[in-house]
Image (cartoon, rainbow over all chains, first blue to last red; front, side, top):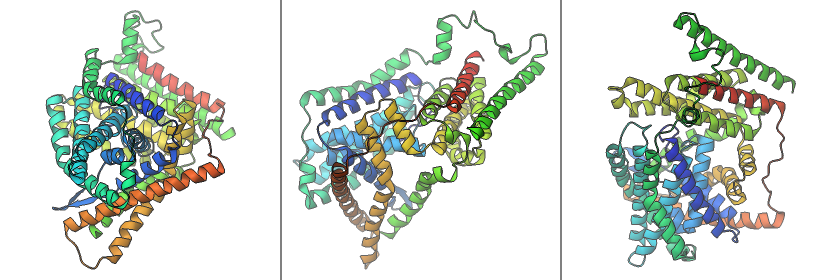
Length: 295
Length: 243
C-alpha cells in the first residue's frame, strides 16, 4: 500500500502533504505536555518489528499486518498517528519503501485514515464486544486506507489507470487482506485487555470539535485531490516558464539549443550536444572527486 | 508456530540488511556531503523525475544521477540490485497500457527508476543520525525527530525481543498445532510483545529524565564540497529546464 514516487501527480502529493502536516501538527500540539516521545519511538519500533511477522495463510501464502488501527487503540488516535508516521518515515528514508513525494499521501492513508477510523470504530463498538470491535476496526481501517490510496493514484493522471480500476483493485484486495489485519488486531487487543486493561482504557477521548474537523478532512480529502487535479497536471518548472513567456521568448537559448548545433545535421548535432553535456558533467564530477580527496 | 517463525526470519533477514548499508559502502564522495544538501538534492531530483512525461527530461535526470553515482564512487551494480525489483513491478503494472502506448510504459518506468536511484543515493550515503539532524535543521518538530531516532535505534532490538517471545513459545510447544492455533498463540505473543514495548518505553523515558535527553540539533557547516554538489544539482535542474 506504500505509494512510490512517480505514481502521484505533484499537486495531489502536495495536497496530502498539507493535510497530513495539519493533522500531525495538531497531534503534536495536543500531546505537547505529555512526556510521550519514547513511547512513540518504542511503539513505532514495535509496530515496525511486528510488521515483519509473516502470518501463514492456508494455501501456502502469508500476509503481514500494518498496525494502524492497533496503534490507535493502544495509544489513542493522536499518539497512534504519530507512531505510524514515524514508521512510515523510517520506511521511506531507510528502506525506500514508499516515495519521498508520496510520503504525505502514505501518512494520510496509513497513519491518519487508518488510525483515526480504526480508533473511532473500536470506540463505537467496544461496548458490544471488544474482540469484534477490534476486528472491525482493523478491517475497516486498512480497507479504507487502501481505498484512499486507490483514489489518490486513480485521480493522478501520471498513473494511466482511472478510478474505476484503482479503487476496486485496492479496495477489494485489501478488504480480503483486511480480514487478517482485523483478526490480528482482535487477538492482540483481547490479550492486552485481559492482561493489562489499564493500557487500553486510559486513553483520553479527543474533543468533539477536533474529531469533527479531522473526520471532515478525511471525508473531503478526495475532493481536495480532485480539485488539485482539476487545476491541471502540472510540470511546475515548465508551466512557470510558459507563464512568464520563457518558452516563446527564451531569455537564453543555451549553448546548444534543442540539443543541436546550428547548421549541422540534427543527428550529428544531437550527438555532439550529448557528448558536450556528458563532458561537462564528468568535468564537474572530477572536480568534485579531486576536491573531496584533498579536503 | 514454526511456519510463522520461518517466514518471518526470511523476511526480516532481507529487510534488516539495509540497516548495515552505511557500514559497507562508506567510501564514496557523496558520503562526505552535508546531509541537508543531500536531502534537498534528493527531493529536487525526485521532483524533476516525476514532474514530467517528456522522455528527454526523464532520461536527463536518470543520466545525471547515474553519472554522479559512478563518479562519486557509488556502486552502480549495488544501486541496480536495490531498485530493479520495484522498477520491474512498475513496468508490469502499466504493461497493459503500454500495448496501446508503449512510450507511456517506458517513461513511467524510467520516472520510477530515476526516483528510486535518487533515494538510494541518499540512503546509501547518509547515516540516519545525519538525516534526523537535517530534519531538525529544516524545523521538523523535536518530538517527531526524537521519536524517529529512538524508533530507528530500537527497531532491531524490538525485533529481537519479538523473535525471542516467538522462539520461547515454539520451544515449549509439544504438538504441531493447527493454523487456528498459530493465529491464537501468535496474537497472544504479539500482545505480550506490545506490553513489553510499553514497559521498555517507560524505562527509556525514566533513563532520559535521569541522564538528560540528547537533543538532536544540526551543528555542521556547509563546506566547499557541498557547494560544488549543489552546483551540480543546480546544473541538472538548469539542463532539465532548457531541454
